[in-house]
Length: 136
Image (cartoon, rainbow, N blue to C red; front, side, top):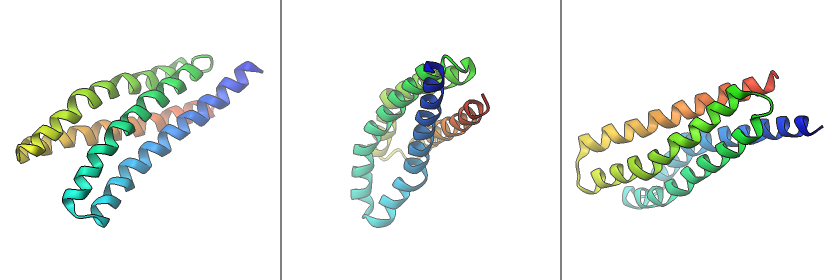
């Protein structure tokens, strides 16, 4: 009974993580830049990213803990997502903001591109987790 509960909870929490990351990455940022002037959109995005990264860190850690009893593979991927999001939030995000503020366009593009790749890798990884958990 407990194993069934943790399995379903891991699957639902992983799905929440997947949906939250996909929604934020694919539509929220684009929506802001479409609906607001660039300066306002940029300011709002800067305020939105720290809580987004906290969401990813905490949700993936909870999902990893719940997945431990059913799939070490899924638990490991989720733990790696959580751990890799910490330097993304604490180091990469401030570096992106600094490059933007200093009008270092090339540096900004490289760092921002790296953050996009990291997020896409996380989204794909969580998709694999959901499939793994759904087939156990």
